[in-house]
Image 1: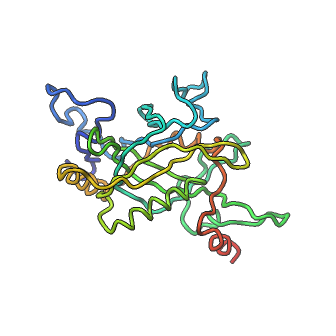
Image 2: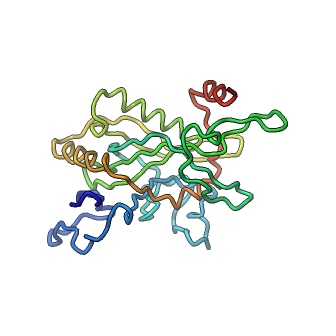
Image 3: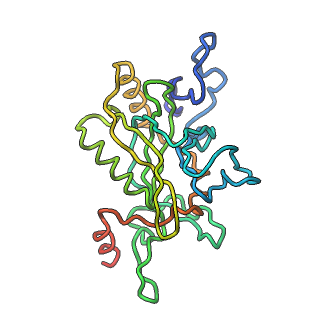
Amino acid sequence: MADDKLAMTPNANNALTSRPDFIPQSHEGLDHLTKEDIQIPRLVIAQQMSPEIEEGNAKFIPELRAGIIFNSLTQRMYGKGPLDFAVVRADKPRWVEFAPRDAGGGVVDPEVKDGDPRTKFWTDDEGKRRNPIATKFYDFILVLDPEGVQELVALSLKSTGLTVARSLNGLMQMRNAPIYSGIYTATSKSKKNPKGTFHQFDLRPNGWPKSQATFDFLKETYETLRVEEVKIHTETTLADTIDENDDFDFGANATSEASNSEM
């Protein structure tokens, strides 16, 4: 496949059902597509104010409820888990500036540079410390059900999800093995903060690939994706700006981050 193509193995695109034996593995008819034409869907947990659970909304998904994990592009629902997955790519943190809720939300700047003043804590005219204007994201690309369907999705974590992202980074680091060699399990857990109840991913280690074939597939997918500029499906990210999971997570680096903002 040409360098400007997003090469995915057939199994990675098999999001819903197993391929019948009479259908060949092929990209016939899709030769014109490049990485600019392809988006990887996100793995999302529905929140109380997600448009996907609001009847009458254009994004409404029947039977979806708060706390349910779903695919942002195919709308496939996974309940509250458990979902086994492997990580085949982990990107450096990125920053996105959103318009305020009372201004209608939406993306103002999708590519805020690290170190930009908008990524720092700041103090308002009343002396109150404020969260960064831009929102920090950690992005991971996962293979769901690595021993079975092998569905390719992205996991983008922000705000209270930053702790989850750091935990996953730590779990991967502790393995002392290639990123694609670990299997993990995701579930949806309910949490509370001053704004109410929200739902968050809980990620736990779950061993290693069970076969050489699975390991080889994950390695091949990693090798393909590590050199590609991947476009993650971001439509649902706009909805994230109006759900209840919007408190900034200071995490283990709270002191250092706050100190840096005042220097």
